[in-house]
Length: 430
Ligand code: SF4
Image (cartoon, rainbow, N blue to C red; front, top):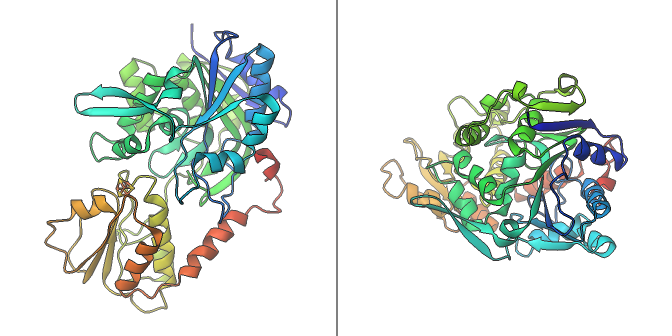
């Protein structure tokens, strides 16, 4: 029998999630006394500059609809687990849970909240020399419901069910996934082998272009995709935002390892007509041809400085810093060429000749360039990830006359950009 995948249009009532789950026989194998774990996507949290939640976080509304469904099924032991990336001291998973209204779900339904970052972990040996530490709670649940958002991703093209499970890893293992070898899209697919999601539901109320954070554009999409087959759910979800499964490295990797088909003809889609719901979304940020900065530098005529494009080795801890540096460098531009400074991040970029100074952001890139003969003067920002203030100071030391308020203003603007726009309701995240 072909794996079942449901595709349902969402119009506001809990009935749509119920329909999506029923159409794919999602709870068929769920015992009433099972320990259920829901794994949403709560990627990170910031109390100071709010993150526009649309297409970034799993909607709290659908998580609540799912809890109601599970309760109706007779489940008594329900947990919600996540391991959010902590971009600021004290703002981890629990802050995300609180900010998105999960604490009221605890009071209302007696569910338990689990911070995977604080939870014990289990060591999973992928192969000789490669082990991943996975949250114990995720390993030990009887029925894991994987609940990603319909989003694109600047490194992996899409971030759906398989990618969402990377949040079950301890921080140290998340960093290992970003090592240049064996590669991000090889590593994280093994988490699914380990935690074995029983059901994957893709929350497509909003879909996000140029994700995974709110710096891209979110669109009201109004669909739910569900399947007991994580690959099948990801294939249909990817298709709705314009991606063929064969073009997504981690889907190819997972399918190959499990001997599964990447042809949608080998899956049974129930509910809506898939073709009707396809709207391509971009995943990538454009960069200058000479790899010296984002396309916007070309538009404004920024020259002198060089910011090579981020790569897949840049992990979540350093990603916000890379974004900040782009904005700050732009703030230093007054129409004249900027100082000859190259700014590197991630784990494998190499300094190029022709720059007076090289700013190296993070322990990884310092190590990768320790014998690079092209570097005239290195400005090293140590840390894993480094402190934001020290990155700002390093840019100043490189004689870039940046305006740090430009970045704070940008973050504020990004957090408010959907306010009062029709179709974008914060009520989904309460
Ligand atoms: S220095 Fe940055 S890129 Fe390197 S492991 Fe730490 S957070 Fe990741």
